[in-house]
View 1 (cartoon, rainbow, N blue to C red):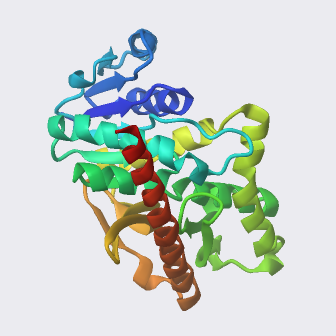
View 2 (view 1 turned 90 degrees about the vertical axis):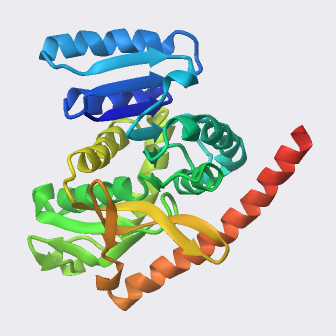
Length: 309
């Protein structure tokens, strides 16, 4: 029996929950949001869809956080969304305060659950949630960037996307780095002579999310599908290599940085030791940069919390 809780019923939260529930590999789902009636009405929509597919998954939509208990996996998308012109890091203080509140309310009712962070800035929110809850937390990290990279190379080279392999690592977002030593096309190491430059691929991966947000108001369908795959890998113990952000001890903090890692009911081992020296250097640089910005953001958060007291 697998019970998954979805915290947040906005566009991305609904998309993830729908994909997971329609996959019919979980037994029970809890949908929580603070907006009155939203999770309840979403529950009805899900039940109608389940009836059409003739699937059996028990669903509860609720505005009561106390109903979220005994979950095996808790997926957190609650928080303020990124708007046009904003960086993910701009959201830190507002969403970190939400994570602290959720850490207090969720951890005591769902001890031992795997917490999967979706809210932006996703890696830093995973670090904040784990810091304040004491519960094991991962971020969906750079799996989304990984699929963007693979899809773009496949389009440019006119090959099937399954012919492209490789990963993106580091911090999710504008600072993510393509781990070129992992990238292959039809089993051969990537080379610019194939028909697309590394710079073009890197620019696409960094800029396409902002372009989608500018035109469509948010990135939903890609991330919602890709994040479902992460949840599926955990529930079904697929032991699939994915680029998610998991806890790393650095200096005095636990921080979350993405690197290729085996994802199943447990997370690991990491494939970082198999990367070439240049890619490993990029990952270490990402860790140092993340730590510096994270510590500065924590100071701002502490000042904000003190000002409210």
